[in-house]
Image (cartoon, rainbow, N blue to C red):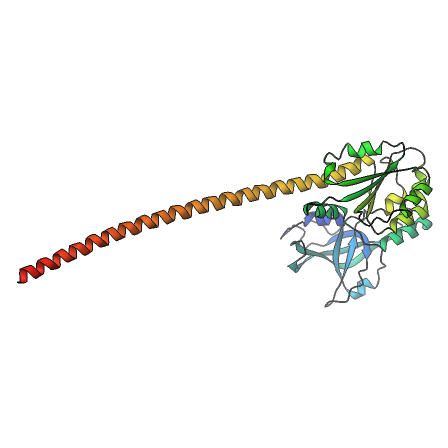
Length: 334
C-alpha cells in the first residue's frame, strides 16, 4: 500500500494504471514528480485539466488542478505534487479508461532539474514549447496500418554506428530507412543536412554517433536550436552511457548508444509481432467457434427434419387409423 511520502515518476504511475479498474493506490495520497505543462484549457467545474510530463519526456498524465493551486505553478518547471488518482466517466480515444491525477498540494519546486547552464536552459525551455510526441505510438500506428515508417538516419562518415544499430534491428524491413553520412565532429555539415532537407515524408529523424572525442559539437546551441525547430520528431544515440550532450537532453527521446536505438526500434516490431500473433490466435479461435456453430446448426437442422418426418408418418398412420375406425362404425350402424 502506498504511503504518503511515496515519490513516483509519471512513468511509474502510468505503468500501474494501464487498463486497471482498481489498484492498491486507489484513495491513497501519493507524490508524483514531473514538469508542469499548462494546456491553456478553460476551467471545467472547479478544475483545470493540464499535464505532468516525465523527466525523460516520454510520458505524461492529465492532472485535475484547482485555480488556486495552478496560480502557484510555472509551465515547464519541475515539481513534486501530492494528490490521488481519479477516473473519468468515459473512455479515451484508445478505448482505455481515463485516469487523472488530482493535485491537492505542491510539495516541492525544483528549479535546477535541468542540470545544465543557464544559456543551455533556454534551449530546454524552447523544447518545451513543442509537443512531446510518443515515438513508439507514431511508429507502431503506421506499422499497424501496413505502412513503413520513414526513418532518416544520420551517421558519421567513417562511423560503425550503422552496423551497431542494425545489429539489433533484425526486422529492419518493417521500416523505410534512408541513411545519410555526415562529418559529425563539426556542426556545419549537420546544419547543412538539416537546411537542405524538407523532411516532408519523414516520420523520425535519428542521429547516431559513437563515443570518443568531438562530442562537444552536440552541445552547440545553434545546432540544437535548428534541430528542435524541425517539424518532425527526432531521437539520438550518441556516445556511451557516460556521455550526456545537450542535444540528447532536448531530443524527443535520447539513447545512450546507437546500439540502444536499434534495440528500441526492434522492440516496436516485437510488440507488433506479438500483437499480430494474438490477433491471429483470436481469429483462429473465432473461425473454430463459427465452424462448430455451423456444425451444430446443421446437426440441429437435420434433427428437426428427422423429427418432422417422424411426426408426419405418425400423423398419416393416425389419420388412416381414424378413417378405418370411422368406416367400421358406419358399417356396424347399417
